[in-house]
Image (cartoon, rainbow, N blue to C red; front, side, top):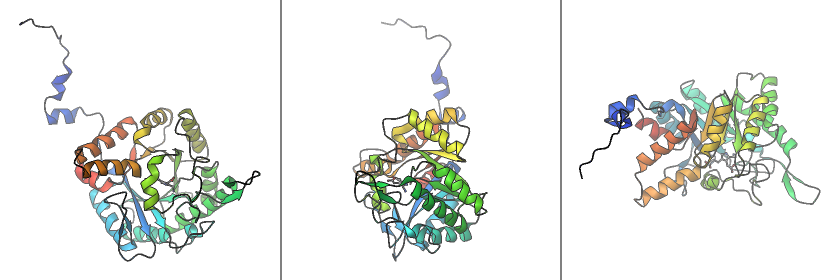
Length: 333
Ligand code: PBG
């Protein structure tokens, strides 16, 4: 058989011939500045403590954190987001807005060492600081159940926002999914003279099982119940758009979708309706799956990480929070 078929003049393979040509026509790229490194800093430890479920991630001391952020700055990483793990937790998460609390000390360290060479963000939530592990203040509802009190929690968030701004945060990132949290934080920041501090709202944060390893890293698993009463139902996409719109109306400067990989449809849908910067958080469970498969020799680690990060960017995220930020930044230079 030597019948020949007429392919016609259009041959997309022409532009796939060699690496430089593919690079020229690539629609999406990874750039170090589009990556944000989440970091954990723990009070009362002398050495960094590895997180078992996140190989390669540690709970930092203040010193080891400075070193890690130095490496991130050298690699060109765009930002760092700080999570604190206090030695003492209580029902109202008092350590969160204690100026001598571990996260705020770390923020001051980073500010004084790196000035404006990297964007310093703070996660603004209570779950790392409360003894019950929930993202807010508890009350008993009229049926006798313990629930997170939305409006009482807003007062705590307002106070934490001001404390984080005082410590030098450029961006505060409320992750508790309380109604009205962005407005409460904006108003508190403005009243305290911090109108220049930006809000990155974790607007569409789903009640995801992919946060499991993070809860080891941040020691914040809820002691009872779960977070479904405040985080979004995994089944809902329209609701994510509604949350995004509410946060923008309240003054969010940037919005986030979280997790990333299982929610690329949400990333795209949000990208299509907003004109503010959009972040996506590649969460702990996404990290752990790739590291676990790598440890078994089942995947090509670097190729898989780059493919996922590019996929998140292609879906429409302007920047990505990822535990691989420093390493991926080095690769992409
Ligand atoms: C809440 C917060 C969580 C994460 C970031 N901020 C945990 C949660 O909502 O249970 C998860 C991040 C990850 O899994 O990597 N402060």
